[in-house]
Length: 234
Image (cartoon, rainbow, N blue to C red):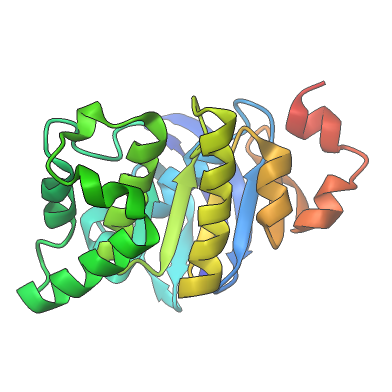
């Protein structure tokens, strides 16, 4: 469904990624692992069109989208949820959901909203609350719910468990697995809680200094001799 070929990218003149080639299979969860500064978040941003591309390309369903604007990638079915700024905190929960479905007809929006609320039932009683008043975990729920309303086929999650309690972290990982199994979503996951991420993942890439140091199954990465050195940073 999605692949990058010989992708080199960064921020203006600063290069972070070097000749990355990776494939992300439909209906699978892929964890992007590696120590801090290895380029994990930059890879997600590059796929979404938020970096400077110095070479290579990004292909979605066989189409070259390297030069396509991020908002057009959203309409194509690619959702990117950054660690911060994934929801409009000054708007109510209901308004966030409505903003996500602004291009949908009323009947379709209602169906998609019901599906999102069915997936994240904790949001039903908070529709009139401002997103700023939600807990960290509830904001994560809301961010993912907006992607469901937009009918995303690919969901890229950057540190979804960051700053969450162990309880909410556990729930988040269960929900991510549910998204894959229930909606056949293709999920790219960058996560500080690497072992929990790999436990729910099918495939994995490990980055080191902006280059791929490992590619294979998530379980093989867990067993890899370099796992602790490069993923956990010890």
